[in-house]
Length: 115
Image 1 (cartoon, one colour):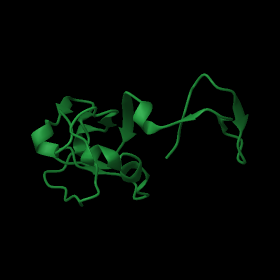
Image 2 (cartoon, rainbow, N blue to C red):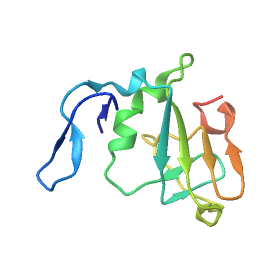
Image 3 (cartoon, rainbow, N blue to C red):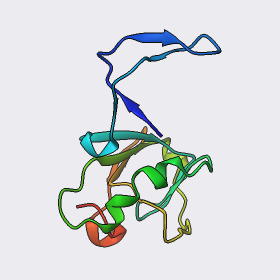
Image 4 (spheres, rainbow, N blue to C red):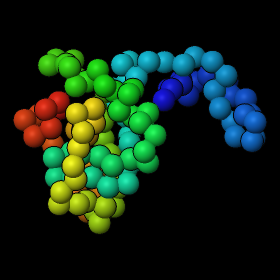
C-alpha cells in the first residue's frame, strides 16, 4: 500500500487512471486513514479483500503504546457488522467505523491498539 500527496502532479497509468507521479509518503506520517471494509466485528476487527496490504502497512501499530498514528477508520453500511469475526495475530483493528446509521468507536482495551 502506498500513499501520495494530493498536491503532486498526476499521470495516466497503463489503463488511463490518473495517479501521482512522485511524492510517495509513509503511512506513519498520516493522521487519518479511511479504510474500505467488507465486514467488521464488535471490537474493531476488519475483514478486507484479502490482499494483506492494510495489515502489513500498519503492523507497527500493534507494537506501539504511544503515538498511535494514523487513526484507522472504516466506512461501511451498518448491515456489514457481524457479531463474531475471528482475527489473526497479524490483524490490525480499526479505531472506529462510520456506518450509514452510527459511529462506533473501539476503545484501546477492546482492540489492543487504539484509544
